[in-house]
Image 1 (cartoon, helix red, strand yellow):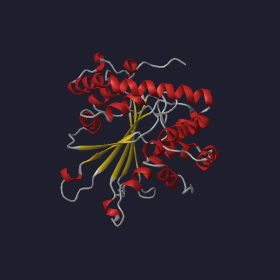
Image 2: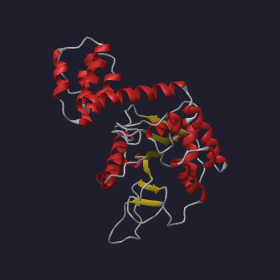
Image 3: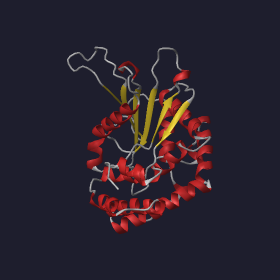
Amino acid sequence: MKRKALSEMNLMDNFLFGSVVTYPGIGEEFSRRLLKIIFGRDFGKLHITPQKVYYGNDTGLHGTRLDVYIEEDEEALVSGDVATVYDVEPEKNNSDTSVKALPKRVRFYHAKIDTRSLRAGETYKNLKNVIIIMIVPFDPFGMDRMVYTIKSGCMEEPDMPYEDGARTLFLYTKGTKGNPSRELKELLCYMEYTSAQNAINHDLQEIHRMIENVKYDIGVTGDYMRLMEDEEYLRECGIREGIQQSIVNILKKRFEMTDEVNRKIYEQQDMDRLNAWLIYATEVENLNAFCEKINNIEL
């Protein structure tokens, strides 16, 4: 399968989107303008939390973990307000299985972020608000809306106020129903067809300038080339075996391996765990720390 060149990617491609959001000196301003267009208000200081991931076995598909989330600066909030975490997820996979799984997928994302946003000893009132924003070039619910807003409520009393701080937005790039702002329509068109010609307002022109800087950065290009090399290896060896071998190779380069650790890695069949172990292998400072992460293996 022919790979897109980085220069040809649009913002619906996860590698480019993740690279822009996490790019030093650009990611925060890009996120601020993106959220401004989506919510129709200005945003102050934001914190960007990147995740170390492979973005999937195709540049158009999504990785197995949250790519990145964006959080409001608590010190900049009005006293008593609770910070909000925003997880923005472009998603191009329109297979029946993937589309049907979207509601449970965002439920899982909410749970993952919730577990990280409350420190030990804090009360539930300090739990941060979480908004998941799924941007899709297909209609996830078949009702031709550009914006689907999902939040909890009481079925027996639909007008009863109920606020748990969780919300999900599905933004369908081609939707025609509803009354979204002109700026949002232009943003979604630009995300799907990222070009100077489609950057037709000031915010999009600034966003396009940032994207061009990222696309032609030699470091980002190198990351993409390494990603393609890794994906080629995974296709040749099989995804599961490739991940197992990648973990072993990374550990061997950094530490003196043992037969027990090798055996444990190759026995593991759960893909979610293997993907997590791959991340651990790049982060830990010694083999003991890796063993503790994956279930207290005794050396």
